[in-house]
Length: 294
Ligand SMILES: C[S@@+](CC[C@H](N)C(=O)[O-])C[C@H]1O[C@@H](n2cnc3c(N)ncnc32)[C@H](O)[C@@H]1O
Image (cartoon, rainbow, N blue to C red):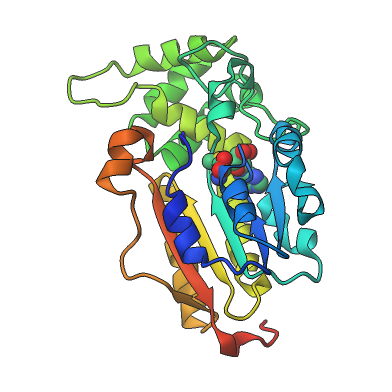
């Protein structure tokens, strides 16, 4: 979960904003990045994307003073190519994961600290919810997704307990079942249900598929010399970003803007411990790759 705004100065530095440019914020969230980008534009524009309609609606109000300079798209950044049409931005940023508002609103069902429904949809217009996975998927499927998306070694035990515990009513009920299946050991720094919740959330929102679709298309949409910055919060995401950027570098489409992955400063981590797992990767579209690639 992200507290705000994470790695904002670094993102702005790597985007190196041109006041007359076109920018895309693929994860509008609570508009911190969006506002900071807009404040650096004069004739430039910002396209803001989020798959959460609530985020779009609150941002429309919060960013109303910018008028036509900002436009909004409800949908997934996996569809960025369709959303942009013929537009070729100077910068694209994605700050992955959940916003604090989503996490801290119990009715959204992302948290086990506060009770809520088994929902976990970022886009509440989609059908699949956490309840379907938890109460209807078979044990093997649940074990596989907890292992794959939660990197949880004890996935089989947890899946068995989930199936035995059905029907599971809400987030606190689910967290209790997981905690009883894998009791906390003194060395454990996180709640025993953290990885399971992460895994179910990733599955509900098809997060890794959407990220892959984004990473496969976004670099080719940048204007020559345009820049792209991606902030991720766990290794499953960062690994994908790293590999995708390497692939684009091999095709001479992107050039990395830093040697080592960029992390929050000690000061940012001290002020905002939730930023500690954040990693930023940024790259620039090469000038000689402005030809259609297949
Ligand atoms: C970490 S928050 C972004 C915070 C934002 N940078 C800010 O300054 O407030 C992530 C946001 O991305 C959205 N999101 C996650 N996956 C998405 C996707 N595939 N497509 C579009 N938006 C997505 C979430 O709904 C959430 O609002």
